[in-house]
Length: 216
Image (cartoon, rainbow, N blue to C red; front, side):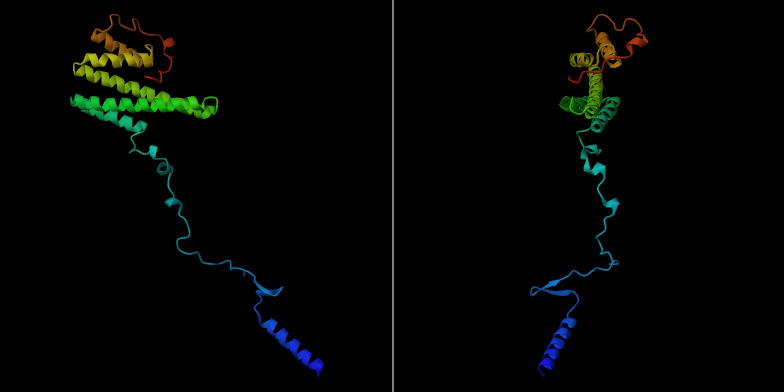
């Protein structure tokens, strides 16, 4: 009878254990749940996927590349274009204001790029060369805006305002460059200087000239 009772008791315990879920293990008196294997074909919930077209573009991440910013080369170019339109309509006051703003903008950009160029020199030559090209471009645009402003002052019969600007261009560009020669020609026509330049047609050897100075 004792053996039969023990057998019944063990059978009952075995039946109870068999009835437990396979995911439950009995270890040290505590039940540990195993993570079930997930089916491989779970449907994707709405909104989980990311459309690459919804990701921000490089232009959105770099706001100074956009057309509506004021601290950019394109903004200065638009000022020069608008000034040309105003000048063609003999609205010289408006043209002078726009050209002065463009000149200040390009001069500020030139100084910024020049400062960065000095910082990256001997640190990263590739970045330094890129910054130097940007400084050169903005310095050239600054001098062109300055020349157009001097012409507007001439049209307004204000040579006292045109002469200092023309001298700044020559100092920045060098007299051997085209823009420097045009500025000097204006000084000659105004009577500020006595000798024309160039006296003779320059040969091809003078076509390679130094870049304009970054400071003005």
